[in-house]
Length: 222
Length: 239
Image (tube, rainbow over all chains, first blue to last red; front, side):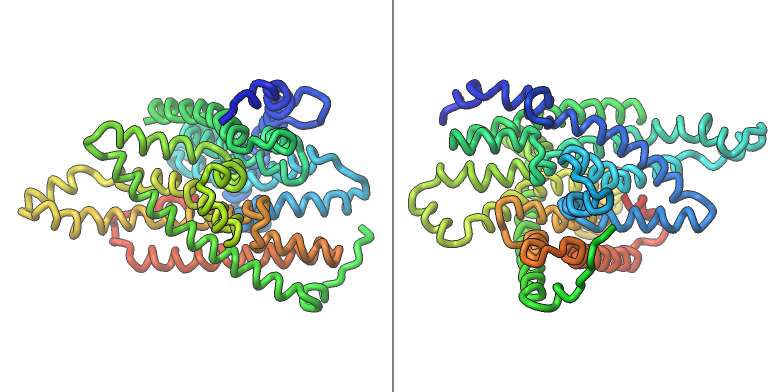
């Protein structure tokens, strides 16, 4: 076992692969942060659409969720990889392809969390808001969503952890994230045990700190 | 979009054969990994309640470390990282018997074992302690209380999230293509490489996954309804 390989390539692995600052257009964080923000934003739309009364909004949203929850993420990434350049008729960098795939895929999961969160708000709250004279949009914005957000916080963080781990799959279309960076170093140094164990620990530190936040939120919600 | 569809690539040539082979490999690897995952999940779940501290710490470490690291990293770890550390004889045997298949199976099983452990633990924790106390008060022995009261409730509580997790395992088996296991996604890519018909190939693969997942989910929902205790357990969301 020879962990000197980590020290020698530390800068490439962390600065380039993990943070995404450097010569390659890569980085785990540079992909994960926008994917989480945009995926959640689209997830709110999908989740609310699933609760809509009008069937022409509700049914497509339900199909969207059921479709993406029944298909592996790897498949969705390949779809985007082949289909986006065909549609736009121009080459798209791996970053754009990966980000689109994650946002579209994870929005289905975020949507389910949002739906469950909204449904967890007591019905009397909506009735009271209507009685006070708020419009439907106002009720959603000022009464339902703030409470729903608090209820869904723990599962939201869990899903963010899942998404964070999933960004490693961007490496299969050549995006230089932490996993790809380790692969590149390994091709040169042939130290797979040390390298993959090291990036496992880096991923673990991130996800574990996220899950301690989730646990604190859960305790506060309880 | 100036794409020329040619759906016949899916049934002419070798495509059909590849898809079938891919589907079989996916099912095979998922089934084996599922058995390993359930075994590890129950074992680590039990060890986390053990009265001996190092055992508890070991089980907690296993669950927290393995489920919080991407599956892809585990695939590379088990495929590239572990075999060189094994004894010569074992290595030779593995290289002759489809190393990538076994590495992917272990990666999937160990990763999902940690996740199953959490599913089982939260299921057991959600049974009120009073159920057990009430059984004792009724004069049941501990064994009877488990067999007649706790387990029938626990299994009904655990089955829905465990089904979800099993479907995740099935879908995650697609990650095995990164270490060139010839499962369904791998074969879909192969058809694309040979015929240059990406949309047709991806549609075929996607539909197979979709049909698999939706039919398993439907069967399990039926079973849950069939065996639900009226008024006892409300089905908690589909997520």
